[in-house]
Image (cartoon, rainbow, N blue to C red; front, side, top):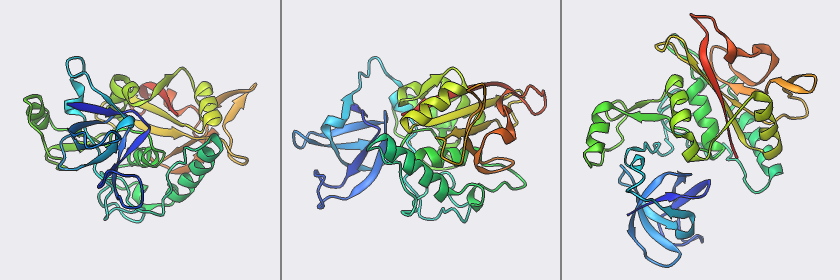
Length: 302
């Protein structure tokens, strides 16, 4: 029997308790699926993460039953790797895993004020403009990795990996498949992230927004997470994805007649910015057939 996480994230613990006797094994993102092993108590159930060997205990009121006759997508979800010990802001090791650095803060969901304050701390700590992890090289830029890291610490889900065709075939045949980077899973690049947003993001708490003015207003008012994702005309060229972030006293979106034209963003790419707005104008609307984008989408998550 399968269940889904019904809160923004859920702690998987090694012991059925939230007190000091239990250790948090990992955090399960919103809408990720777990397999029920045992209803150990009325409050704490033992579960297994799909396609991993990770088992532990979750608070039963924070998960909801999945109707498997109506929802088959749970079997092919890609749970992200657990935070790695090798990757850091100073290297490019294990960029397919979340950062495991305890010095990087998570978004504090207690109140709007705490969300806004902690988002500023995340941006300052990741420091995309100077961190080697996101620095472009001869072969690639790293907009998807920075966006993934930002969302991970903001406690919202976007995929970093996707199954290989062989792995999908095995999953569709009812088999469990281990996460092995380069063998069973491969990176989610920006063009694929665009498709994921349209196909699956709403089941993970994302809401499509009509324009950048509405997106900036939501991010500012709620301390939420905004994303702009653009897909290339030429699909073998990388698309682009950025996060839209709350305005601060010193960092502002660009407005004309009170309407946001260029939102306040944070990105890795050909150039990396902790904050920017006017400097790249409406980059997502470029229709250059060689360098431009066929379409762009705007999404928001509380």
